Image (cartoon, rainbow, N blue to C red):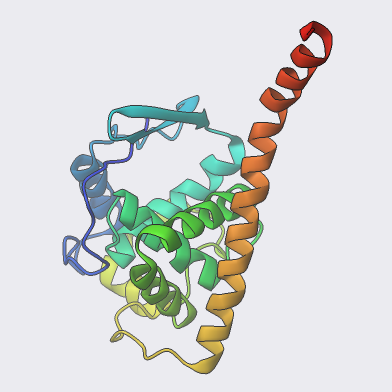
Length: 210
């Protein structure tokens, strides 16, 4: 089962993946550093995250399996680690660049964006601005041949080899908009999760309360 490390992250450019590595080599290194299975857990039935020692599991749907192959390469290309902070940063970066029709990725990234706003708002803002000034792989069609390309060449193609951009007025407006969307998504998703147990509680009270 796939897991996410819970060590504190330190930002987006650690230099762990040299430009001359192929994406396949770098992804293998990412899996090893993150404690993932050699295949990344892509075919696992469940995704297991750990909040300290508390396991949090959700189904590994077909939509997530399609998106996570690009998502993992984004970790390599951006240098955001697979820690909680790194996941929240890459969520903001992906939202800023657009996630195409990967609806599960939209949901997970918006939830991560909202969590990041509460914990590391400055880092989330920087990651979002970086995403506005670069592109990502979600508009590509997945082809295993991408793993033979070098990290450096794909970074150049996506604009990730540039210096950290200065935020513009449009960047700030876009950040405010997507921050609101992420918080609304978080609230709606939380309400959806709470609705069944609250309905059961109400039914129990209605039928059994004196």
